[in-house]
Image (cartoon, rainbow, N blue to C red; front, side, top):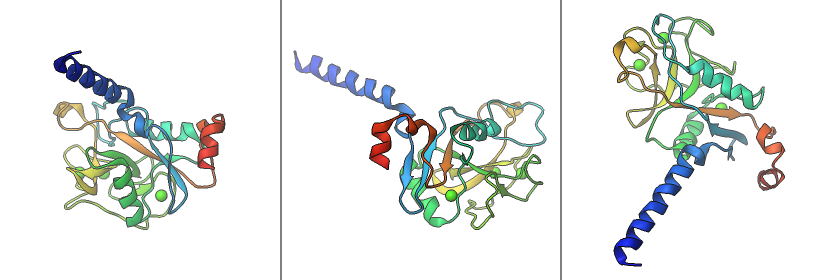
Amino acid sequence: MTYFQKTVSNGLLALCLVIILGNGAFAQWVNNPTNNHWYRLTEEMYFGVHDESTNDLSPDWFDAEAEAQSYNPEAHLVTINDQAENDWLVATFGSETSFWIGFTDHSAYSTEGVWVWVSGEPVSFVNWDVIQPDNYLQGEDSAHLIHFGSPHWNDLGNDNTHGAGLDSPYYGIVELPGQLVPNEMISLDGVKAVFR
Ligand SMILES: [Ca+2]
Ligand SMILES: [Ca+2]
Ligand SMILES: [Ca+2]
């Protein structure tokens, strides 16, 4: 094999690994040793939500929460309780893109401007980016972690009248309280043994 062929071959192998791994690196549960809770990214990407939209994109933040609940009744989009949890999430999932969190002021859960956690936990900590939340334009009722690379939160909505460039779909971060073994691990004795 010539040097050129070998280089191309190695390049294709690396490309295949990237495609195979993709987001899959986080489509498995990761334990946070500080609180013994489990976390993973959603399988799908989702758009934000707001009350005023007449042109909603889907699937949206509600579907992200539904995916979280599908793993376990105790699982929700992440509740970020303190700076340490925020730091751990950024260290674990990175700051290259944004991630939905379980914080909302949508009328289904609360009222405009009053942000609550979908898990029902009290709001003990907020980490908004500067001038956020701003409920921009048609309204923004779902929050995400990582705002233009900053490890802070921003509120974001969902309205395709502004074109696909305004709002983007993101993965959500799912949190499962400690002492519970994620459903999908129960059948994987090997994996369960590793994390027991
Ligand atoms: Ca939490
Ligand atoms: Ca709002
Ligand atoms: Ca905003």
